[in-house]
Length: 364
Image (cartoon, rainbow, N blue to C red; front, top):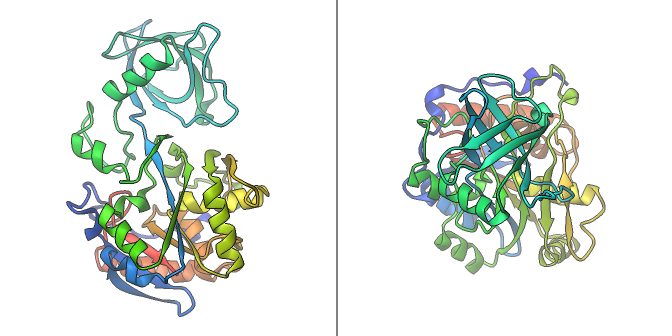
């Protein structure tokens, strides 16, 4: 399948640069998959758009201030480090008691294995380049204790906003520190927010539950690959970075009961969907709890085993996330591509706000 099939024209002014003053004030495009139609709604209407007995799955990952500034010891050149979520089997401490992490690096010249850099601010922690792996993430060692490392990133790290949200270099504004985080964020580890969850407020969650809709949580630590467009000419040539997830026993039981009773399971965000479908594909969703890492790449004509609906934001042209939405719009066929293309054309015409700080879309 050609990647260009998933392209569309998006005026730059529709890319949201700031969050709404009120999280729940976002607009909501409701897509009825069976009727192949859509309607303009508000996020506040979500409790009335769902059914009593529906199971809503939230991703409670917490974004860490993962963008770090540093200086090359050899030349004084600037280096930017972006921490990647650790996978379940990674070793995160060295024999010397330092912290080992995978990072993406950006610098004026190629960094060499064995080279040292110094973190800006703080106590001037040294960092050694141990392995180079390009887009897969370089392995570095931070020569400080895990406790000092955590203190440093929370005092000096910057919120890793996606590249289409433009901010000046330097400390993150308090607005971004607060708003690029869901109100139910709990487990630190993500370098990108599960943005569908940004629309919820405590009051909206309470109203959803008072309407008889069930809410459970899982954790998938979102990596920077979520921003990466599909560059291959053919969709099948693309790959998605593995992201670690944990689905607790309570959530596994709730999902299995909902499927048994033929109640809808609705994922809040593509991250929740990928964790559920990825776990099912690995045969772990039937156990007491489920954990691992998923590199599941979903595109038409994919079928779905767990998820019956999706709340998500509006996605980048030719992105893997847009392909996922097209697949869910018509499971088992390619008909969802045309439906989502037309729905997105409507969203552009009606000037919906796109991407991380933008409006929402509900597929039912």
